Length: 158
Image (tube, rainbow, N blue to C red; front, side):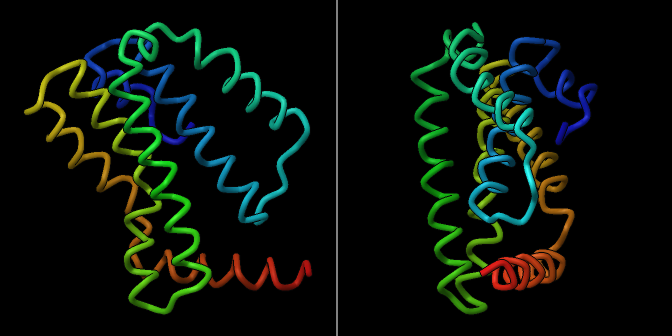
């Protein structure tokens, strides 16, 4: 789990289906990133769970179904932003990497938007501030260090 479940329940105003939705989305986002970056070995069981969650659990999640039009648009944007960030990381210099650092975590907008659905705009802004601080606690310097390790690892595998 990428966020503490108690924290997620607070952010989602106790809506367990919203929490399940966030947990699925975060897991999918991180594993997709691992598959593309090839920086972590993902077991067959983890890949099977990932596809089951995407193809079966997510479409059956009633929070997602009820709010599909809103959340799916945000999800499409998060995916595009992550793909752009990956390109900027691989092809760019410092300036592009500074953009990628924030852009690649656009999936957290799904948490903010779920909080908006659960508790309104003021609540979403509070949650958004909290979730961004947690998501970016690695700092830009830490991000660059981990990115260099990932690039070296990928180069060594070629």
